Structures are given as structure tokens and as C-alpha cells.
Length: 295
Image 1 (tube, helix red, strand yellow):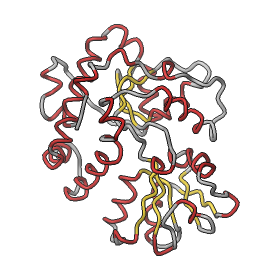
Image 2: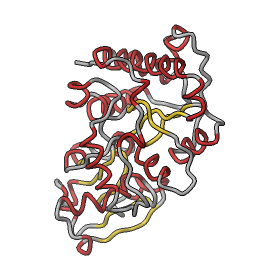
Image 3: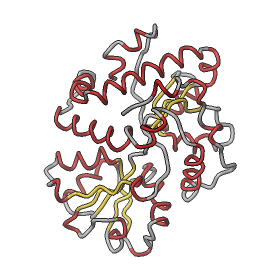
């Protein structure tokens, strides 16, 4: 949104028309069919999609969230301050939610015994209401969504704990730009230009989140500035401006870490064939690493 609002796409001689997808699965389907040239989607959803027979060879070309925002959000007043405290409690899992799908790997890695907690399958619409009402002790979700939504609902910040999976051994990357393979082949310079504009937009956002959130609010309905600014700062601090991104620059992936993430996804997904990093991610469109560096 920042790149669009600040004219960064126009500066690259790109005419970008944006639309709203109904989640990552929809975004991937649109890019696979060619109805969209590019989209932002969860790279782990892309990994699962690519494992399907007959899947279009859609690849990611730029990773925005160096760390996926998957988390458990819990109430401290229910006796939860760390991952193992989940045992003996009631956890709300949204069926198909990316964080819920990685939960088996997180439970295994942190020695949480699944048989020692109660799991309630819930819909996204009741996730925060049920936790704020005390009907659940914890829920899975995105760290920058559920926690901030709950504070906005009146749950005291000091009664919330956010157990970010990335702090408990998760290796998975998060949302990435994906591209239709035919479009990428026919328009490689346009893809490169789009990524350059995206990098410039992320840099501006990091430099001045308060200004960036005004750009975002101008393109959305009903946003509350303080809430959205807190959300943006959380995304920057937890998911984008990571140690790996500072070291290697925005947008790329580490092959060893990617392989480790595939092992964690395999706790919930039986692969027909385990992918390599090159099967899912194409770094040919990235600008030079030096131009992607952040502080």
C-alpha cells in the first residue's frame, strides 16, 4: 500500500491494479489461474499447494515476513506465561489456520503433550470474543492480529501473553510475493521493477511507521489509527526487521532454514515429494543484496 500511495510503482513505469483476495489459498489460486499476475500469500500455504498433483508451478520471488507471525495468544490470568503452561488448559484452534497447522510441530519441539490439553475447534469470527469472555484460555492466530484485537476489545495488555512460534523454535517464513510463471517468463523486468518498488516501500515504512500507517488508512475502511499503528509496528519488529533480514537483506531465504521449515510443516502435512528451496523460491528477480539491506 505504501509503494502504491507514494508513487513508487509509477516511478518504475508500472501500472499496478490492486485487489483483495480471500486469504492465501484464494491468492494462490488467482495467481495459478492467471487472473492475477502477482499476489502476497503465505509461503507455507504455497508449499502445501505445490505438493498437490497438477499444481501450477507458482513460485515466491520475495519474502516479506522473514518470520511467520504464527503465535498462541493467551491470558496470563489463566496461568499461561510460556509454551508448556498450555498443558491442562483449553486451546482454541481455528481449523485450517496457518498457526494451527504448525501447532503439532511446536508442541513436539517444546515437549507439550497434546493429550494433556483440551482443544476446541473454533471459527475465526469467535476467536477473540471467546478468549476475552474467558471461554478459552488461549488461541492460535497471527501475533499482530489477535493480541492487538484483544487489547482493542478491552482485555488489559498486562493480562495477555503472545507466544510467538518463532521464539519457540519455528523456522518457517511468512508471507511472500508470488508470481504467475507465464507472467514472470514473459515480463521478467516488470517483476524485478515491482520488487524494487516493494523494497523501497518497506524501507519508507521502517523509517517512518506513523507516516506509512496514514497511507494504509487512506486505502482501508474503518481502521483506527492507534490500533493500526500498533499493528504495523508489531509486524515490523517481529516479522520483517529480523536479525536474518538485517544480515542478508530483505526478501531472500536461507536454504538450510528453508529445509528445516519443511521438516516442521511435515508434522501436519504428508508430502508427496519434499520440495527444495529452488522448487518454491526463485531469487532471480531480487535486486542485489546491498540494495536490500536494512538497519
